Image (tube, rainbow, N blue to C red):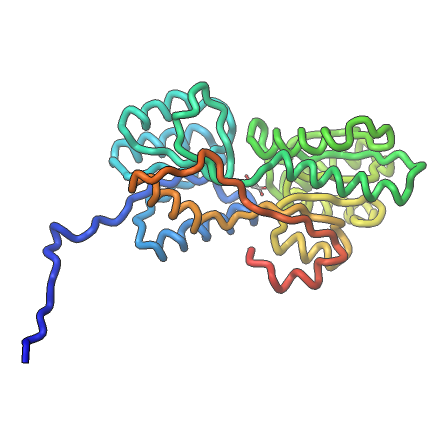
Amino acid sequence: LAAAITLSVPSAFAAKPLVIGFSQVGAESEWRTANTVSIKDAAKKEGVTLKFADAQQKQENQVKAIRSFIAQRVDVIAFSPVVESGWDTVLLEAKRAKIPVILTDRAVKVSDPSLYVTFLGSDFVEEGRRAGRWLVERQKKTPDAVLNIVELQGTVGSAPALDRKNGFEEVIAGNPKLKVIRSQTGDFTRAKGKEVMEAFLKAEGKKINVLYAHNDDMAIGAIQAIEEAGLKPGKDILVISIDGVKGAFEAMIAGKLNVTVECNPLLGPQLMQLAKDVVAGKPVPKRVVTQEGVFPADVAAKEFPNRKY
Ligand code: AHR
């Protein structure tokens, strides 16, 4: 009988784990928390060494993190840019160091598109359009009424804030019955959403018919402000938001939010695959768009058990 032969690979030849340096925006929303968990879990599952840095919503912290990833010679740098502009210099440093950069979730505005290999994330303009289309349809129920809209914008200069504003405006433009009367940033957080909604209510009171919030967290904060002002969110003021987190579904089931447009944060598995392909020299698409839906309040109870974030 032939003796069983066991082959052991000398450690010098064992495959080195892929090392990704990831700079996250922060922990500003339920969406962001789900995004971070997805990326960390996917890295673990794929045996990827993840160097994770939380930028606490500051661009300067992201620049520092990227420079530190370059110094550590990671295989891939991935990041979700807090704002769109101001990345050329640091991305050029990464390019010169021959470290590929993958954008996740948010885009950048750079003079040279070769400064990053691919961008994985949602179509924020389309999300804004979807929010606008829901309102245009809803307005048909009260065709004679003018609906005054207040808008809670995301972080100033961020891709989702700019794009969601533009997409929404594009759809309601030309409809004289839909008017944005106030628009201000709530920085994508519940606390700011509440604070700014309080100011809107103080200034406009019962004139406000619709709240369009660029994310669910700001909408949830604003719902509190509406209730504290003695009004009924979802009825006296229609509430439209974006993300589709569990908190939004709970608010819809409670009748306080009318619709949430989905923005999928579960980008981890796709990010790991893209990073592996890039390092293996395989061609990757320059843009990978996440598939998403729209969830109005009347489907919330049925959909809630299926929600993963
Ligand atoms: O970039 C995605 C956005 O950032 C999400 O809509 C928001 O909740 C987050 O903070």
